[in-house]
Length: 405
Image 1 (cartoon, rainbow, N blue to C red):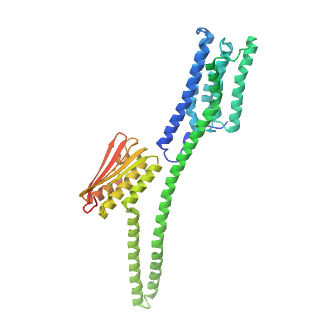
Image 2 (image 1 turned 90 degrees about the vertical axis):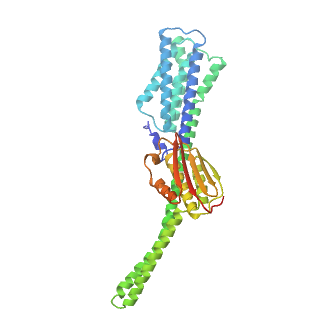
Image 3 (image 1 turned 60 degrees about the horizontal axis):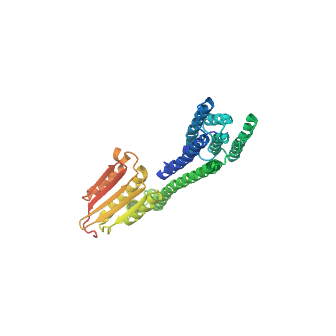
């Protein structure tokens, strides 16, 4: 049988989102709940026809059933490995199968609803089958079904009499639900695998967007620097050759090289400035799209944007830095961006929930926030950050003379 698969290998390379963990919690809870309902109904219906007799068989039967239920519920945690994820350590599988097998055997000596006691072994087979490849899965399910049907045959050989299938509607419903357990478990794990795969693709899409932006910037930088550096190299080589032949011509080439180098430096600065200083409207829309793609509901409340270019750029940098921190340091499901502008000042407030513990920005001030705080302070404004439980808020206030109100 295949070895157990580490559940983390099924997760995306980065930390899974809150929605993925919530989906697994819901899936596991549903499977455990169904097992508890079936086992509880098994005990109630099996003991319903007559009062419980405190003999050795009845006591061992109930103890074995409780152990089987506990082992099955604990075994559900291994289902996070997913379909065909591989069995855990053999000891866990034995610990689950052994009590169910004891219940199956002791059930042969029960005088009431003996067929009930074959169900725990069937449920154990359903759990094991989920972790096996398709071929082995079908074999285990077939073996579990065969053992369930073998129980009345063994009872007949032991007692020389048949026990009829119970006529009570509740018992029939119990067997119907038990028969559907493979479908319930396999479909739940199939849905869990889809959610994990979608989350992995979401993270890959974000990484791809970053990589594409880096390639774009690298291409622009190459276009600017490549041509100028080639010309500088050529003119420097010509000047070197002309130093002993024509000093004036060599001086002219050196002068041209200096001008070209200065032009290349100015264009590089312009490129970096354009890369870092995108317009505020673009940053706001990008923030909403990125946060929404990450699974957070983002609400924008925007007053007329400031006209002062310095304020415009500072607020755009604040939006970008806050969005980056939300993606890195939280599992936000709700976020809000509010820009309030008056005649004399502008206030940008960005908040989010889902902060897992104390964020990195609170433990050690990062370069991003430090640079942003200095930029805003240079404009006469201030930057404040607030952490309250799982809620984080960044507020930037700057005077904006000449801004539109």
